[in-house]
Image 1 (cartoon, rainbow, N blue to C red):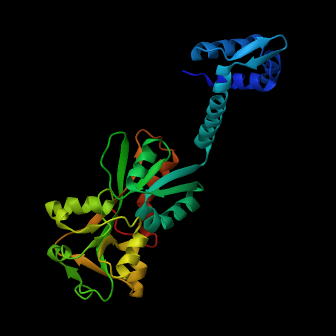
Image 2 (cartoon, rainbow, N blue to C red):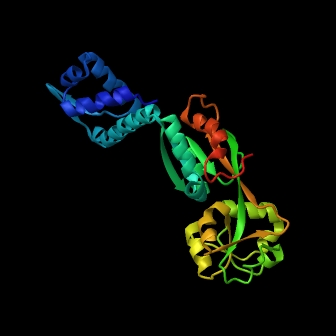
Amino acid sequence: MLNLIHVRTFLTVTTTQGVRAAARQLELSPSTVADHLRQLEEHLAAPLFVRRLGGARLTDQGGRFLPLARALINTAGRVRNLVHLPGLRIAASNNVGTYLLQPYLADFQLKSGLQVEQWIGSNPEVIARLEQGEADLAAMEWWDARPGFIAQTWMRERLVVIVRPSHRWARLGVISVAELQTEPLLGGEAGTGTGYLLRQKLGPLADSLVILDGFGSTEAVKRAVRAGRGASIVMESSVADEVESGHLVALQIEGIDLAKEIKLIVPEALPASAPAMTLLAASASWAGISGASSFS
């Protein structure tokens, strides 16, 4: 295992161009500095310095190691800052982060005094950030129960079919799955929370739906529906403003309870005092916040 203390000594010797000068700066004995260099060279199986009377010059191998050594020390400093940072890093799937989380995070930030750093992206990207330690907590539209994490259902968000006011379905209120098969559906492709849910609820019938993908966001989908390019299935909260203003019409699907269970996910074995666990505990009291949906 590479010793970062030895790497720091290497950088100091490089900067001061000598073992004795580095020893004075590091407040170590020259023999200790020399020992650090010896152990580092043994670990890397390469000479890093040519030692001369009164100084030390980098070898070719030492020159190649220099930028890597700087990166290692910089990364170690960032890790320390992140561990001690009084804040919380959240990764949220696009719709959850855009349409659901904001009032709750504002409430949590106010009551806890913790700063919240939010990142929004696709469901696969959110999972990747959580697994790679780039997020302390994830908020997603679905979860596949992979080991090493704890998932808690936060809220249940209903899905609706949306069309423009002049569409032939606009006055129906409820449509059948058979009718749904006759209209292009914008978005809801594989990899999205909606696509996952449609396949779960409709089974083989989901394959008969005409799905047009590539829109990239719910905002783009809403614009396309308003323009008359087809219908879509979206979270009810994401079209609340457009439905209220009359720019879109929301419909139910007959005989199908189409709703997403929004999940909050954290790594296993976190201490109760961790910011992510504090938010997880606080989420139970969020039902009274404006815009809340039903909780499980």
